[in-house]
Image 1 (cartoon, one colour):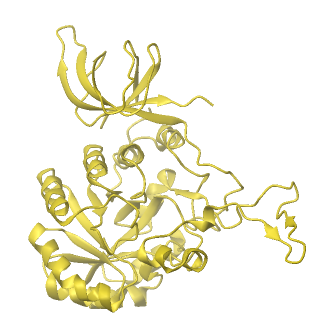
Image 2 (cartoon, helix red, strand yellow):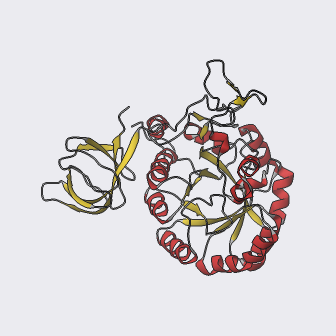
Image 3 (cartoon, one colour):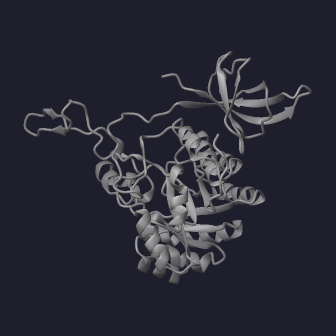
Length: 398
């Protein structure tokens, strides 16, 4: 692990696609989480939260000093907007800290029916200019989530021009869309209105392998010279962990990790890595950690110039798999730790498991008993202390 340096004062906003992800990202150091109810969120395929779960989620987060931002940022029809007053009243009752919105009508309704809840303007609004940011501030917005197409220089110029009270948030990690700030018509055009990206139900056709078909003969024409399909629409994933100081210097107040469609291990591991670097640790070993989670090739997006396209990998890369989640732990007389672990994936005796714990380097130990049954509780002896919600993982053999 590198030497400790200066902390980088930016809020770490982590994704919570469901209650399990919420618990894990809070455990691993998120300052705030963003999540959605059963409607109006841009990840309709995620587990998300019922009304009752949302109320419990806010209480759980607040008890641990973590803020909750609720996404209400899909394209709004009259039917959607008509149901918002009841939902915004629920957010007021729950004590949500912010609502992330893009539609002007939704902003007005949030101000009326949830006046105690801060308004954050979604990246779906594609804010790239100080004029637009200031106008949203005039409408009551406390924060703007910047368009993903901005360079660091453009962010710095926008920060210079806008009022100091307006907070700026920017994406730092995760999937990028072949669209303008995620506003894409391709999914709905190919799959029908039920799979509209603007309503959170994107089928991700930009990730598909594409080829050309000659209309008269039906012959399939390769897009690439080597005869393979092309991933000509698939963007590389964003990774700014080595440039967090640059984001802060440009005027960014909060960084956002994409991933509400991802599992608890992904959300926890990425949150853990960014937490360590924001707390002053060397980014290099944690950049290597991010290579172990499921991802497409990384890039720095538009921040440092033109982003790179996915060169044609069929699958996500992944070099580590979740094996179990610690549910209980107690110290043994010999300094060891006895942990009750809920099995998620099989692991054999003698295998080396890696443990992710908040505030710790990645530690490893040799498994002395097999983990076989998914969902079963196993009692393990570890040579070091762990806590509930710590994660046990294994490297994936290539």
